[in-house]
Amino acid sequence: MEAGDEAFTKSCARFAKLEADFPGQFRQFKFLTNHPLHAAKNNQDICYVLAIIKAAASAVGLPSGVTTFLSRIAKEARLLR
Image (tube, rainbow, N blue to C red; front, side):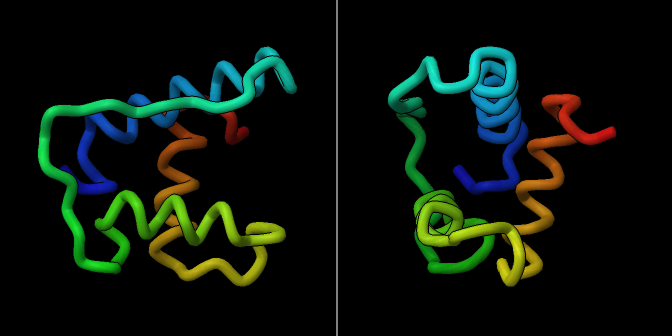
């Protein structure tokens, strides 16, 4: 499974929407799957993308592939205007 896969992006969008609707009410979200995760330390590697986001102080300066991923999630969650 890759970061761009529809099932993953839709799950992330649901998590983002829940966090936007109920800020501060969740300690964590877990994504569980029985599919192998793509592992290449690039923009399709789910663990890599999430680690880059977690380490960032803000969206400024994120790699373009990660920014594209975040924009896709925000659009899917209807958080972008």
